[in-house]
Structures are given as C-alpha cells and as structure tokens.
Length: 81
Image (cartoon, rainbow, N blue to C red; front, top):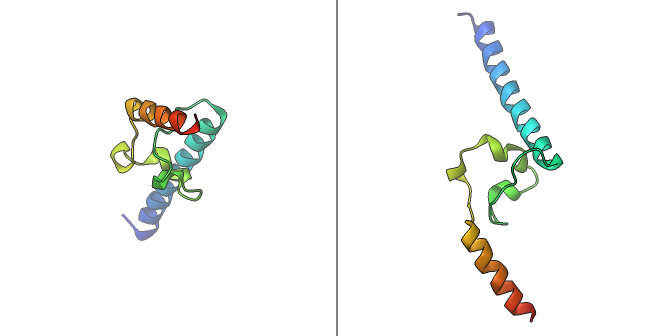
C-alpha cells in the first residue's frame, strides 16, 4: 500500500467522522435525534465540542439520571417558593 493510498484512507475516515458529527448535531437541533441528558458542566455542552457529542461513547459524558433530574427540579421548586 503506497503512502498516497494510506493518506486517502485516513482522510476518508476523518471526513466520514466529521460528516457523522455534523449530521447528528443537525438532527438533534431539528428534533430528529435524541437530546443530550448530560449535566450543564459536561464537556459536550461547550460550543466547540458540542459537534462531537454523539461521536463519543456515553461513558465519556457526565450523564444525569431521570431520578437526579427529578430531585434537582424539586429542589429548584422549593427555592423559588
């Protein structure tokens, strides 16, 4: 395998990765994809890194369970009363 062939393969894989990142971000923005359930301080909530949110494993995120969300909502409701 020559160097130019290897370079084409690597660049093709990088292009597919970026295309997937753009497609999933656009699908999430339009409501055709799931919503992120991470905490607000998770790296995937940052503007530049948000693009790669769905291209990384879930374990790399700060996931918030539905029970934790419910407790946070109750605590916030108590503070506003």
